[in-house]
Image (cartoon, rainbow, N blue to C red; front, top):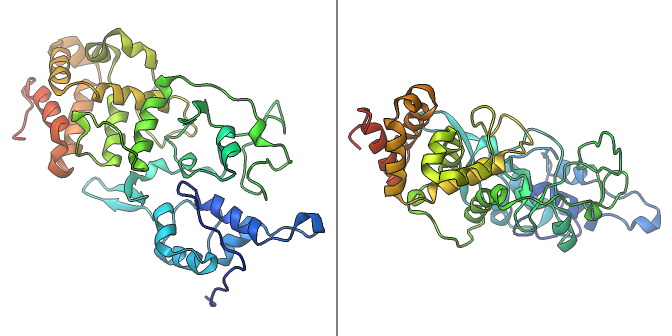
Length: 339
């Protein structure tokens, strides 16, 4: 590839900005003034100038090096925000990627070209947040509203998904101001799990339950999701009647199965609520549930516990407190191992 000619005007990415948003702002800075009647530089040209696909969601070091040369932004600054290429990890053959210094399962990346956003966030700063690109983010935890995926002003009966082919991220393709869209409030039960994950991702201080100490972010997401699969009787043993506020779920947990998934927020929050229990209380409740022959024979409890223990066997320190609890519960059914 020919040597890359740096753009005339650079821009620094925001600490929480997606790469597509960064391309868009670079294009804005290096475009003629629309008032002069000259076509603006399309954002996808910025990407192609660095030999990138505007729609891609993971980036190699070579691609980030080219983008650094084009934009004048240091490689390290861009590399932190740009998800790495997926790679297989461990004997399970899991696909994972890295972003902001953390490892995430590949299923967190979307398989759709559209974008979603929070109108209130765009009012505060006209850049697309990195967190909106991940499957587990269905709401804005700051403003407690659901993320917007389409512009109802364009076609109220059948709104089309928002895309990236715009010069200004605050408007849709037809020029409607996305900052003025109607907000759909969401409950704390849909927010708390996602907020916990976001705080880890952006290294924000927060209390860490004993059962989650030592787990990596990808492992925490796995635990949340699979604990949300526990049948209602087991959920009641753990949380009492309060478990009902998270609702019910159809089908087993699979982060990458459907996008968007309006229930994923409730699943993550339920998993967090379970993991916020004291280890002794969790163990007692799960052993009590496992001793019920009907629950053990007809529910997903054995599958979930054996799955989690198998996963924790590959995690550093075998899952710490939560691994010991799960193994002790299985031991109560004669299925324990030397932990």
